[in-house]
Image 1 (cartoon, rainbow, N blue to C red):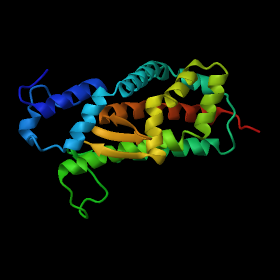
Image 2 (cartoon, rainbow, N blue to C red; image 1 turned 45 degrees about the horizontal axis):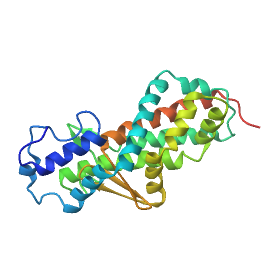
Image 3 (cartoon, rainbow, N blue to C red; image 1 turned 45 degrees about the vertical axis):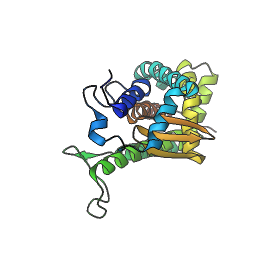
Image 4 (cartoon, rainbow, N blue to C red; image 1 turned 120 degrees about the vertical axis):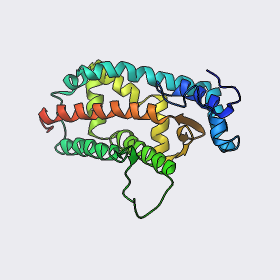
Length: 246
C-alpha cells in the first residue's frame, strides 16, 4: 500500500515486501518521509535499496534460499536430520568443536538482550550512544557474530564433515542442509564475513562479495540463524551418542 508523498516509506515497504519477513518494515499508515525528512536518509542508502530491487540475480538467489529454509524448517522440526546423523563416527575432539560452536552461537544471540524494551550493552555507563544507534548495533552485532560462527567457524569443521557423509550416504535432509549452506545467497554472506566487506544500512545489513551485494533484513537473517542453530544442536545431539572415529 502506497502512502501519498512518502517516497522513503514506500521504498522501504517495497524492499521489506520483497526481502523481509511478515510484518517486518514500516506500517502502511505511517509516513516515514514526513518523520525523517526528505534528506533524513543518505542518498547512498536509498540507492542500495533501489539497486537491490532491480537486481534480478539477487532476488532469485534470495527466493531460492527462502524456499530451502522453508523446506528444511519442516524436516528439522521432525528431527529427520538428527536421525540421519546419529551413528556417524566423529573425530576424537568432535564433540568439543560442536559444543563450542553451539555455546558461542548462544552467547552471540544474547548480545541482543533487552530490559524493559531497551537494549543492554556491555559498555553502558562508559560510552553514551543515542538509543537508535544502540539498538541497531545490538541487533546487527548479534546477527554478524551468529552468522560468522555458523557459516565460517562451523562451516569447515566437524559439522560440515557429518553433513557431507550423511548426504553422500543418501540422507535427504542432510543433502538439503548441504544445498542451503552452498546456496549462492548464503555463499555471498559467508564470503563477505570471511574476506569481503559488510556494513549496516537503513534496512539491515549489506554483504559485499567480489562486486556482488546482498542486502538482508534483520528479520530474515534472524530466521536464517534460528535454523542454522537447530542444525548445530541436532548435530551436537547426534555426536554425543556417536562412536569416535579411529
